[in-house]
Length: 258
Image (cartoon, rainbow, N blue to C red):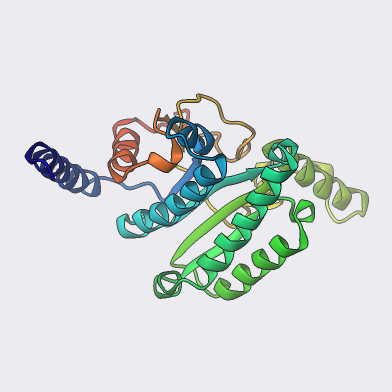
């Protein structure tokens, strides 16, 4: 390795260690939500197939989960596959479904997941998923259902508007059945009917790839979340990028309208 590369790597490691020390000295977000974007563009810039980009993105997710556990982030929710993603080419959707199936099984059988007692759940309209993906989601859920030290949510076949509509319909049905009164409906009740009913709202929502939009992700839950956008494509997202996102979160004043 050239001397210049050795020096660059050493400087990078030193800066990363310094930044980590500073970040962990402050309040770490309890819940981080991530819009994982840029797999295809990452692959295209490197002359690789989009399938390779998705595969690398899947590997990155395992890395990021480890960062969260190591740094005390207790809840991680990732946007893995939206309801709109079903509109992609049939071959790509099938590839992604198989990749998600493999990822769910891999996480469910990971020694680290069981060592750290990480609860793994799929959020979304699972009725839209192929049987083999639903079975993998059930397997992951069953394998980790007794854990509560850390929580890992994969939003698959997920849409924020669709989630709100489903919650409203559920509440409306209870009104129609006479179980509740219209005047009983409030924010807490609606929150209890969301996929994330047992998960605190995200403190920090970050998106990779340079796009500055939410794309129908956790629309109800991010009312008071801090938003962070980075130009880095998801497969190229580094630990130092993760630390910078948390540092930015720490530097903002969270007043909740007060």
